[in-house]
Image (cartoon, rainbow, N blue to C red):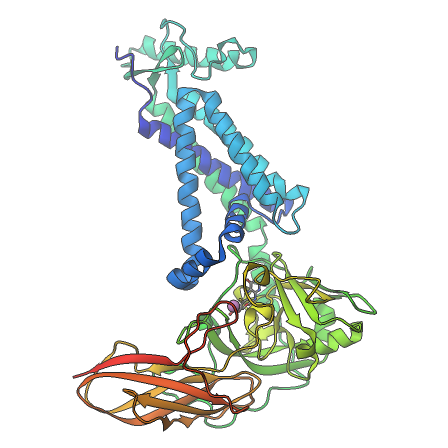
Length: 555
Ligand SMILES: Nc1nc2c(c(=O)[nH]1)N[C@H]1C(S)=C(S)[C@@H](COP(=O)(O)O)O[C@H]1N2
Ligand SMILES: [Mo]
């Protein structure tokens, strides 16, 4: 008998991983059943996002772009898997260590859940249920896998529970199993040492237990996801019929879109529209239960339902949305036709009190944004929007209702899944990104981008198209200039734009590309007469500046 062996690492790891999977499945089921807002894995992830230093977050956004959340979730699951494996290794030494590890892990989960904005006691249920299920699974798997060798001195399960009367039955069962195996003359697998006694690894028992655990995790997980409302919200979105606006968008002039291949189209299709938010898992908000609370410094606080919103005068507007994290030449900008109702009118109905200068809007998942009141009330098309490019707002883009304010970066204006607007003051309240080093106010800076040719392109000599987009929302783009190899600036031809709130395409279609390496630069001038500065500054704290340039090789 090899009496010094422990349970093989693979078996211990498997036990830990299966217990972890059961925890995830059961907590998903519990979250679906009690309608808890926070599934623990996501809560831990969100807490991690919020605790991450801004610089690291910016690095993640720069490095992984819109995949940053996928990378983060994958990272969280890897860490969880490692912890689960460690718990498995502990548990085969002594079940009590494993259970203690799970309990500690549960406490971290509870802390993460309770520190989420708006968390209540019910949000703890998934974590508690998940950890409890994992404890049962762990105990069951250890007992299935590690069978005491009868007659060995102090033979017992590795939880040292020989003296615990509650475990006596299970121990007796396990002993009986082992005896039965002995009677059948089944070969006793290698024996390992755990606690005081000798144990043999029951592979078959372990594999059956594993299969059972995986099925349990899968079934509970799937039911939980179904209950969590994803399907209902998707159905509600599909059912939503967009009414005709009483104020349609300014008609698009002929020639808003130069229709050049490789140039950003004037209207960004919804599926191509950039997405930036802090939501690891997109909030599922049912329009039938959605309300928007207008509170704070108002004469008549109100709570609007989705039906209330639809009964208001509706308007459509083409507005180019842009992220403050968009580097010079970056992709976080898109133009869409938004359908909604006037945010200013809703505020006027509530009666904004004197002295209020900020709208602190909150989303269903607790993210906040601070928008200047005067900007929203100055007559521009600030919207509570529920339609985007002729369809209901996609869930990723804020279904059922989001804010859109022309001329302001998204982080200070474009709250998705918006549920509350508190009328307040900048010196009394602070929004999510402002407390993380970004400017409290975020007017969009005049910028331009070269879409064609692409940076690093290899081109044939001869006549070549240079084209791109320029934007100065709510001011309007008046001119775009291009220069090659620091030569003379040349005026680009501008496409039309319906209003000052959208970007404008531009083109130079007769550049004579000569063999060699070339650098192409662009700069825009807005309707106030301001020409983009050449000074390159980064995105923090209030948006990047500088000229976009691309390098090409002509041969
Ligand atoms: N609820 C919520 N709304 C949000 C954000 C967020 O993190 N959470 N990010 C904002 C930022 S920074 C931008 S740039 C825009 C992006 O909108 P989009 O994802 O629809 O393009 O949404 C804004 N609205
Ligand atoms: Mo943003």
